[in-house]
Figure 1 (cartoon, helix red, strand yellow):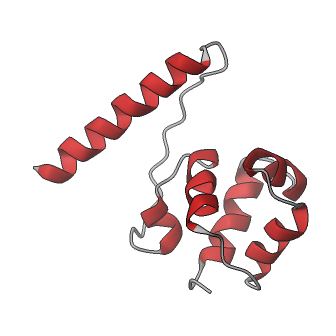
Figure 2 (figure 1 turned 45 degrees about the horizontal axis):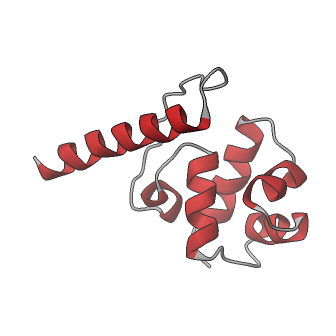
Length: 102
């Protein structure tokens, strides 16, 4: 188990006012898997870790404990098409990559 991951996952889920079932549906797993992540009995696969980071709008580095602080700035994408959301996400990722390279 990754130290502190279970607490971060539970805290983020509660901050987003989601149930374990909501999270499970969002990343296409069973609610018992989410429960296992949050109790520390299970560790997410890389695919599920990435899906959780997208869902909670945080980096995998934060979830894994590499980054100590959570920097989240929410953007309302509810009125955007899926393509617009994908392009926005790609743009934000490019800014992160550019920042890391400087």
